[in-house]
Image (cartoon, rainbow, N blue to C red; front, side, top):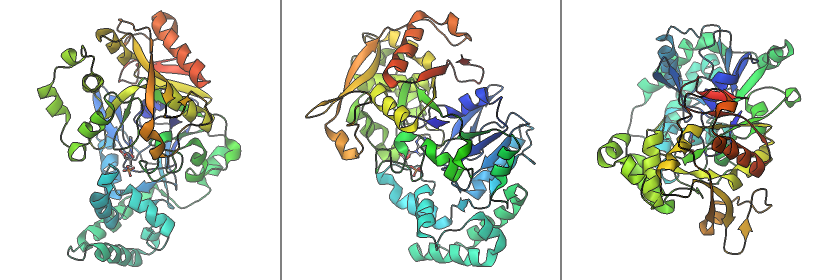
Length: 452
Ligand code: IMP
C-alpha cells in the first residue's frame, strides 16, 4: 500500500482497517521522516518507524533493509507503545541490513536540508552514505564490530564538525543497538520463509509517489524509493509473491516542505507562507489565535481558503508540526500515480472534509481536471505528465467543480447511506484515474472508514 500524492494520505489508518487477511505489516523505505498518527481510545499516538498494526497482537511488524533507522527514536516509540500495554516482544522484527542514522547525518541534514524543506531527520545523508558505501553502517555492523563502528561514527562526524565531542552520543547509539538486540533479525531470508509458510504480507509505504527519489518532483523529494515496485527491494521478498497494489489518496491534498504542488490553494503565496522560518512560524497555535476559519471559508481568495481548510482539517505535520500546504484533489497527478504504479484498489481519506466546501462561496468541490502549460493542455493519462520540477513553473491548474454536500457523513458506515453527491464524487475520481475506489475515510478514528 502506497501513498499516491505527497504523503500524509492516512495510509496507517487504512492499514489498520483492512489488515484482516495479513499476518505481517512491513516497512520497506524511509525512517523517522514518516509519521502516522493512530488514535487509540481517542488518544493520538504518533508513530514514525514502527509499522502500522500495533493494535493487533497477532500481527508481526517487520522493518525491512530498505529503511534507515534512528535507534534512539525507535526505542522511544517502543516504550510509548508499551505504555498502552501493547507488547512488541516476538512481534517486531528488524532486518540487520537496515542502515542506521549516524550523528553526522543529523548534523548535515540540519545544516543543508532547509533548501528542500526536509524533515531534518538525517534521511538524505543516511541514504547518501548507503550509496557511498564506506561510511554506511548497518545494524549488523554495530552488533558485530562495535569498535570499528564507533571509530567510524566519530571520524565522520569530526570530518564535518571537528569542534564538537560526539563520543558520548556514539556510545549511546551502540548501547541502543544492544537494547534492540531482541528485535534484530540475522536471517536475510526471514521474510521469504514467512511467506512460504502462508503468511500474507502487507507492505506499508512511507511518503508517497510524488516524493520518490526518481519518479517524484525531483529535487523536492525524499531520498528513498517510495513507489510500489520498491516494496520488494527494501522489504526483502522476491516479487513473485505479488498479489495486488493498493493506493491511498486524500480528498483534500497536502504537501509539506518545498516543491511543485499544482492544485495548492493560494499557489506560491501559500508555499512561501507555510515554509516561513522553515515551516516553524505559522504553527497550529499561531493560526488558531490569529484566524477564524469560518470567516476565511467565505473568502473567494484561495490563499485564505487554504488556511481555513488546514485549520479545519488539522493539517499540521505529524513529524515536524509544520503547517501543511493544502490543495484540491489533483486528478491529473492522481491518474499518473495510479497508472505508473499499477494501482488496483484506491482508498480516499478525509472525504468527510469535503463538506467544508458547502460553507464556501465556490461552485462546489474543486478538483483539478487538467494542467495548462505554455504550449498545451495536459489531461489525465497524458504522455506529457511533468517529471522535472522546472516543468511545473509554467503550469496552472484547470479547476472544475463537483456538486457539494452539506451533510456530516462522519458517522456513516455503509456506502448505501452516503449522500448521492459523495457517491458521484467517488465515481468521478474512478473515471478520471481509471481504477476502482474500494473505500473512503470519513473521520480521524479507525472506525471511521467505509470499505466496500
Ligand atoms: P526528508 O525525507 O526528510 O529528506 O524530506 C524530503 C521531503 O520529503 C520534504 O519535503 C519532506 O517534507 C517530505 N517528507 C518526508 N517524509 C514525509 C512524510 O512522511 N509525509 C510527507 N512529506 C514527507
